[in-house]
Image 1 (cartoon, helix red, strand yellow):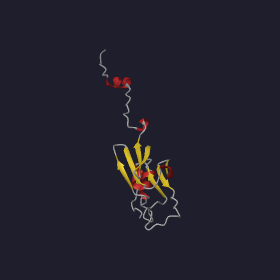
Image 2 (cartoon, rainbow, N blue to C red):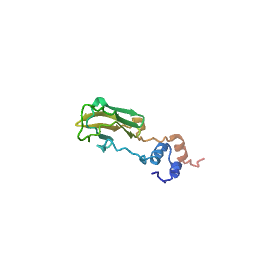
Image 3 (cartoon, helix red, strand yellow):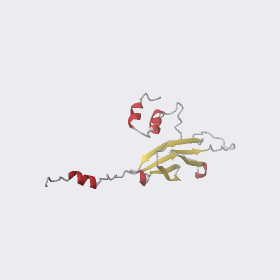
Image 4 (tube, rainbow, N blue to C red):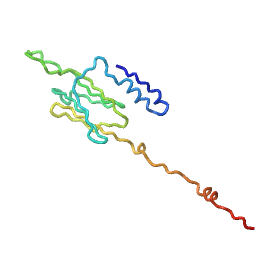
Length: 156
């Protein structure tokens, strides 16, 4: 499902947003979207976020978390099954997975923990000081301004 939106008018008045428009155009999920494992994304504060993945049966040594530029990748290898066990019902999905999350600029991983079968990844958006809005002073040349306002008298 592709969007039929035309972003070309935005290109005329915005600079450096090419990546955002590309993300919007490609935002549709793939045809065979795998919804495994289930996850939540929560906004905890103004600049803090949390991703929680349900990973029952996986230990911290079986999970890999990778932070790439603007991308968080969480993956796990399939667990090997015990051949000696005969299952009467096998409903636990302990299959391998790769889950990717697009991250905005300046989003960093604060930490990750595994508790009660849930992988919790905390994120924070930290805008560098030089990128925060600042007030620009306007220089005024006081010499020219004073000269232009002075009225000369016509005394002889």
